[in-house]
Amino acid sequence: MPMTQQAAPAVSAPPASGPKKETDGRTSQRPMWLRLLARPEVGVFLGAVAVFVFFLIAAPPVREAGSMATILYQSSTIGLMALPVALLMIGGEFDLSAGVAVLTSALTASMVSYQLTMNVWVGVIVALIVSLAIGAFNGWLLVKTGLPSFLITLGTFLILQGVNLAVTKLVTGNVATNDISDMDGFEGAKSVFASTFTIGGVGVKITVFYWLVFAAIATWLLLRTKFGNWTFAVGGNKFSARAVGVPVTFTKIALFMGVGFGAWFVGMHQLFSFNTVQSGEGVGQELIYIAAAVIGGCLLTGGYGSAIGPVFGAFMFGMVQQGIVYAGWNPDWFMAFLGVMLLGATLVNLWVRNAATRR
Image (cartoon, rainbow, N blue to C red; front, side, top):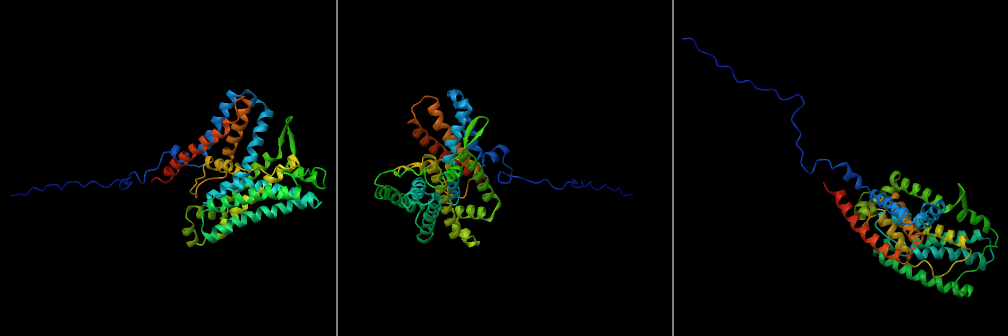
């Protein structure tokens, strides 16, 4: 009896493309808009645009070229200090003495030049040495003692505030320095630190150009150099950074000296813009510098931020400070706005940090 053969069931070959890759919530790519918002400078850029458009509507004088030049100048005086303060914050520290340190540099240059009857450039150089020494002292004390930068720079703030007033009274017999506009070297120094360029019939202060140039340098420093990597590393975790060979002590001190350099530069601008300096000024400015950096996307906990963000943060402050005046409002509202922006930026930065680290 013949036997019937049953055909074996066909076995389907696997697809040429291979097995399908499984994904879950941890490995799926986040949306582009979320990744874009995680950039530290994007949020403040949108905020700056919103503030700019608001005052274009609410304050018609803002639309004039001369008014915009004034706003940019106001922004630049904040932004020049906000940049080194931002780098320091990315490195995990902040400096409460930054505001009075600006005045210290201006007072030093003025009194050394006038009281010792020397060329003003001698005073400028001495002021630079003093400013860098203050920054180096803050950084050195920080790394040697391990104390929080809040306590160390608060102490420096109080010391400088008292020294500024007491020494000025002792040396000049007044609360202000003497006029140095007729001294040797003044015109040359003024052309470097406080000159004005005419563009399209509108006078633009040189600090605006310095502000943009320093922002470009700071961006290059953060993103293209080893020092930038060290800054992010020590801000994220200084113990881990030291374990992989990052020179934590050098980085911290250098960042504080960067703030000292910024204080010197802004102090020289103030001195050669007004020829004299009031010894009681500068208190409170450190909060504006820190706020501009925070609004610009720098986390108070360190390890995150950019140099471009504080540029927009400083522009927002300059825009509001002058915009309130052009709109005819009470300028006392500026400080209230400062508090609202700082609190709001802190909350936004908290969300950004969580979004950036979410897997």
